Image 1 (cartoon, rainbow, N blue to C red):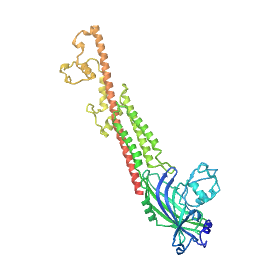
Image 2: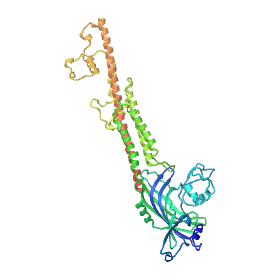
Image 3: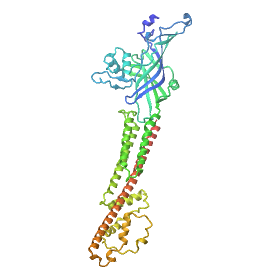
Length: 514
């Protein structure tokens, strides 16, 4: 036995021209983490490795029927099976002293990286060691600190077949597709192969079928995490580099994310904020500061985006569709605020007493747009008439004199005396129904006091006419603002509907592709 231990540095083959057959089986136990920003997958797996040691053969009859023993793994030769998709920290002091991660797939670059890393220095972020004298140390230091429980023993059969069970915390690079986050399905590959031995020395093959590996992984995989296992596929192939060839086994692990956490924490709050923004259009624009409310809503959504930024993955390869969704939601809120600014500006004209509604605004907004959107006029407001018919009436009202025709009815017989009259309507009835003083008292115009009273009444009449005109202009501008608010609200709903249709179509296309 000691003689066998002394030969641990040599491949255990009686005839070195015959390659050593090694078989592995793979069982995924847990997905510890997926880092989308660095494209790193961290898993915990069970790896079972078989090979034959031609020098460890005995007859069970000569050893009291012992057919299997356990020996220290460190005292025996073992195939140098590694995973090619590991995140390699570049050790080039001239270019990558910051320890940037370089992802690569098996190929010529893989061998070049390993050969170059043997004689180079390791950044201080990786560990206290300053050099990597052996191949295994290169792999361990470049991948991650190995915190998995070590299995120091192997089982050796009397025929020389060795079984080595290992529990590995594997950190590997994976090309993660984050477009459909958080409903994404990832397909990560694990490529097992020998680091140094070619097919002339070591032949590698699967110990179980890939269907059996998938079934075992689904049986033992912890189901309480964020990811669930969909399937495990694999194939065997030969890696060629120059004149040398290596046996490799490529295993694809298909995992799917459970989106409940992100739906509850991201999509539902964003939908609620968008719903509040839509309902804010029902706030009366003339009596409530709707713009301040929408600005507060946008600030709250911005804070939500800042908090959400830690949960969203971001890579240089692309942006997840949920990030586009949040950006468009923010843009729709800004559009909603701009619409409110437009309505506020229109209603501001109602406070400018001297500015009349342009005729083209009355034609376009109060007639055509109102009819187009089926605007329902209030009961106490009549739809505007043709402005061409209103012009003569307006000019006559401005040029009419103070002489008012005698009234037919008196205040006692006025038909509206039983109703509550406003101040303007009541005074308007007064100067339209009471006959002039000169008609009641002939010769009264020669009395100075009566002249002064007539002058005061004329000023009062002019003020009332101006007040009535201002009220009419205010009502017209308010109606323009209400019609535009009704129109912009429908346009806003149309934008949101189109946006929802686009999102649904993109989602259906992604579902059909996956």
